[in-house]
Amino acid sequence: MSFFSKILLQPDVEEYLGNVFRNKELISALGTLEAERKYESLLNCLSHPPAFTTVRVNTHLASVKQVKILLFEEIHKQFKGLSVPVLQHPELQDILLIPVIGPRKDLQKQSSEVIVGAQCGNSVLRGAHVFVPGIISASKFMKAGDVVSVYSDIEGKCKRGAKEFLGTKVFIGNGISELSRSEIFSSTDSLKGIGVRMTDPVYLSPSLDNVLSSYLFLQNLPSAVVSHVLNPQPGERILDMCAAPGGKTTHLATLMHDQGEVIAMDKIANKVKKIKQNASLLQLNCIKAFCCDGTKALATGKREDGQEGPPFSAESFDRILLDVPCSGMGQRPNMAYSWTLKEVTSYQPLQRKLFSMAVKLLKPGGILVYSTCTITLSENEEQVAWALETFPCLQLQSQEPRIGGEGMMGAGLSLDQLKLLQRFDPSSVTSRGMDINSLQDSREEDLILLANKDCIGFFIAKFIKLNSK
Image (tube, rainbow, N blue to C red):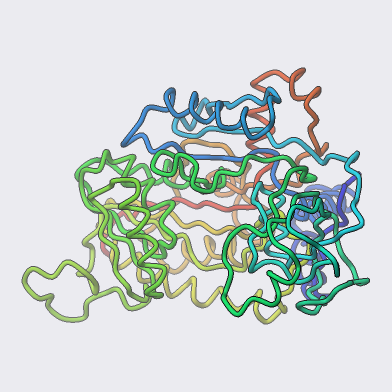
């Protein structure tokens, strides 16, 4: 049984998603009851956080063994002596996994309440404290130092500054207020610091903000798998087409031992700035970040002598990562998805424009990896079917490491083609929740298996370009 209610969707989005997961191919293969069970399981798991916090070690600056020791000491301190292990992933050697304790059902709710926005609430469920901009409402007489219960306004109906909120709210834990109500809502300055320091969240995850910041990068497990699948080699020229905030960019550079060239692009200037900041923080020098719309990255004429940035010449990259903008329906936790059906279905044309550009920029013999953090067929398997039909020069490749499951039926791909894809489907996890006793009784290999399954929804396809045609 789920601790939270299943994800709240707009009615037309729920109908659309239901049709996706009840498509004829799936029903024929699984049967109606099993397809329905998997769909309901998916909706329930999306409102809960993954079972593990995943961090990537910057092996450019430190060994995994060194960072594992430092991280264990930090978690031991944060968790007040609780013995929570730090596990190294056996197939992703630069990845460390920290089990999430929860849901904790014995927390006592306080009379003093703080209401936060849904996005802030989602962050709290993954280990964050409550920062002032996320606070929407606080009890009338709340003072600094008060123990307060924090609730997430999942429907976005609480009015800023309200002294009481009787609408739909979800309890996400207790904490200590760093500021009074009047300081939060009466200040003429834009406050940015911590508003509530979480002491007893419903899900106990480490707070890693500014912790070992040059050595660690907080990253979802499938997002780390992508860079390994692309498998960049030292000395190669790599393009990360939609790169912000730079997690995968910096991972690619690290895997190349900072030797070669990683070109990172994003069309929003502030996001490009963030990529550069992350590259600098992790002391990676082979990354060059540019503000550019990926659909306009191909040079139509001759490039200027010495030109580093876009637009680029055709067939000038050894490998390309295309982690496209998407509907983001695989992100967890997400108790309420507010997007309309028009917004959800708007990404396929953009993804195809970006994909077409990537094929033109890729050298013959080069590797293209396409990925999303969503669960729809139209942005995943349907895009693969379209790509194979549109570009005869492309061929699907097997993926290493293989952590996720095979692709989903419904897009007309063969069983052999589906086996070459990786779809991370958290609905395959049958039980939810972990307490300290069950954690201590678990074998490490079982915990790793759980981490591989109980993650965000994600999709990866890998192609090789056979020739120029």
